[in-house]
Length: 386
Image (cartoon, rainbow, N blue to C red; front, top):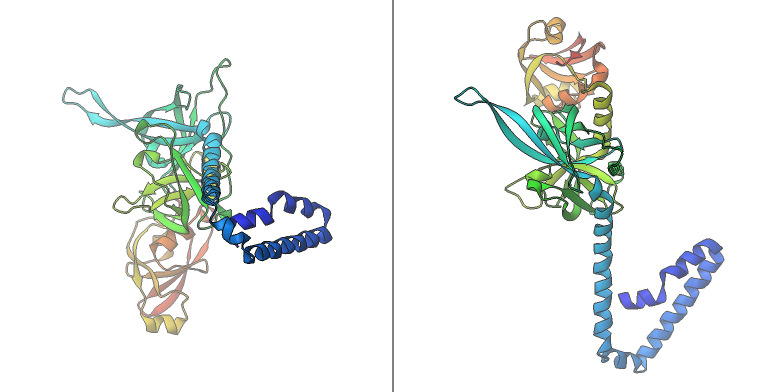
């Protein structure tokens, strides 16, 4: 069945109607549709179909249908842009860059994108955009420039929250973007990236969700989990801008791109951003625990893995232990291999970072290590990372 026949036989309004009147009406509608299909096949077999195929107007109808499909895609993108663009801002950052030979302070400029997520002027962006900023200025879609202050930033998740000055009573109010749910995303779903790269406001690129559940290493060294991979083109100035779905809901914060590659871009899931933003608003920072070791990921000998029935074939090798640290007080030594913390498998340094969250600050945990070929259990109390 061609798309033209399908559109004729199963009009959208008919199915919407029968959905409200019950199953019997739906069955009668399908039977009428089957009758129409048989009639169309019969007319095609007695010559009418050949006449229709030779009709030059048929190609015009097909072209109109192609245009309709293109218009549907364009409508989805333009609708999302219309909803979110008023919330997208350009962020200009002034950072200290030492002093000149005459002793005057030297200033370095940078910038990125962000978006308003509350009506009172809270903006979500990337940590690397505003980190160590001496002065922040925000430019709205309508051209208004306003100073802003940093509420808090978290280099480990590459997210930050800034607050712009409240507009005067006679100025237009701020438009807050609607936040979606990144857990509901599906691979292949249409997404739109909006930002202000290099000051070009409302730059729009469209693509699809290429993959979900990626891990991206932040500039602090920790891994960011549940990262969205997309082929919507990003430029360095897009950092901090929103990644939205076709309904105009923000489902990610544009974060990074792999420069040598084409179409491999990443955004931090909005669910992660919601959690980080709430903690930054409450505490101004994210509390994380640490045990005071320097480590690297190493494989564990297969005989040891089989003998102790370890769930992972690698662990975190302790290279050094800080003085007066939780690890030192627990009796951890250089050369030990951490394979579990509080019964959670540790396959390497990244797993150790992931398990050491704020909920473990000051809480006694069981640390499972391999010392030579012996498996030991140590009691450790992680402290808050400074």
